[in-house]
Each structure stands twice: as C-alpha cells, then as structure tokens.
Length: 300
Image 1: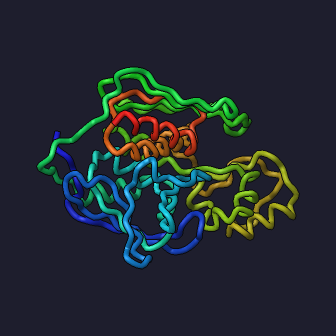
Image 2: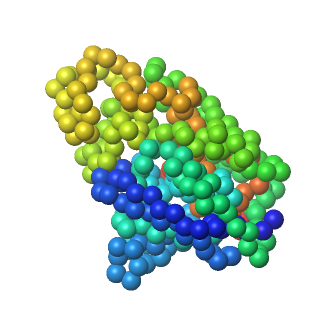
C-alpha cells in the first residue's frame, strides 16, 4: 500500500472551544514520509511541530501539542478524521493556539476530505503491527487501554460516568471504512456540573449548545443556572428540568461512547503510523490515551 496525502488543500474556520477566538485551520498536501505536522502561522518564524505523542504537553479536556512557546489544542477531532481516511502526510496550518471546535465532531473534516480526495505517493505505507497484548491502567480512575493482535485496526470502547442520564455505554468500530458513517458525527459532551470548574480554569470559553452535548443531571439553583447560561451564551433554561440541553437530538443513543472512540483514534494517530491491532478501552480519556500512545511509540 502506498502512502497517501491530500489531492489539494482545504480550510475550515470557527471559534476555538477553549479560547472562544475565531480560528482558521488549513490542511495542505505534504511529501511522502512527512507525517502529520502543525504550523502556527500567527507566530514569528511560523514554527512547525510534529504531531507525535511525545509532543503532547497537556490533556485537560483535550489534547494539546506543544514545544516551548508553541501550543496547539483541540487537535484530536481533525487527527481522527485524517487517520480514519488513511492520510499519511499532511501539513496543518492554524492561525492561533487551537483548532476550531466547529460542531464538536469530526464530520466537517470528513466532508472536506471527501471533496478534495487523496493522492497516492511513491513510498510504501508503514504499519505498526501488534505482535502481543499490551495494556496501560490507571487504578485510581479505573481507566484501561489495551491492544490485542489483529489483522487490521479496530476499536472497542466502554464508558461509565456513574450517571443516571448517561449510563454505561459501549461503542465499537471494526473497519475504518465505517468511520464516516458510524463515528464521525458523534459530538463532544460535558456535564453541567463540570462547566463552572472548566470556566474557572480559563477553558471552554467557546463552548455552547451548537458544538457540544450538555448533560444536566444534578439540580442547581435557578440563579446558578442563569449565570452559567449567560457565560455560555445559552438562552434561559429551567433549572428544575434535568436532562440533555442540546438543540440537536442525539444522533445515536450511545453518541457519547462513539465520541470517546473518535477521540481515542485521534490520540492514537500520534503514534505516527497506522496500527494493526484491536484496541480495547474502558473509561478512556486523553491522559491515558496519550500514555498508551507513547508506549506504542517505543515499539517503533
């Protein structure tokens, strides 16, 4: 199999999830052997960083790549789309410290990848073939990510937030050919109880009901709800009505689990080459995903 790059470039614009600033990200064809690289066009000298697991510097509510003063966050949805489409080489230019959140899924990237198409290059595609089982575990959170030998790349993800509104869910993907139909549209999600702490950390300034599933399960006062609605640009919401607050209905009943699978693919793309193995994850998150990706990098 030959390596693949984009047949031509494309750009997407929108607000950043954490900064709330207007961002434009551009995806450009790159030569064989290039891999995934990110360029900050707004910085002096237009620095470029390899999108690899060892360059992840933060995993708080997203995957952040950085090196010195270079920082770029919320990269996982775009990388998930690129990896699932089989793209090996791409230069990603962004004019700020994060990719736009768009609708909170990978669908906008998949749509544009289909429009521009892919071009085969004169270099063989290299794969990391798993020969024996491996696992990482976090005993404190109960999170585990493991991999079993397999002929291709497949994933099984289970989430459990000990929530009545979001019960234990499982999502699986047996072929990357099904990513666009089964996973790409799954949106990011957040519990209302987590919004204020995230705002206190200076995060999710661009979050709203257009780009995230918001789950309200622990009743708060109307005063607190009004403050949160004002901060996030949401219209008035009755604090006594527990449930899902988003405008758009769930695409699938297990959409949160599918989004966690989407995130996991994006984080594993930072291994730097396609993986042949069956990934099994319980309660995955960006932190343990990155620990596992670094462990796989050591096999290369």
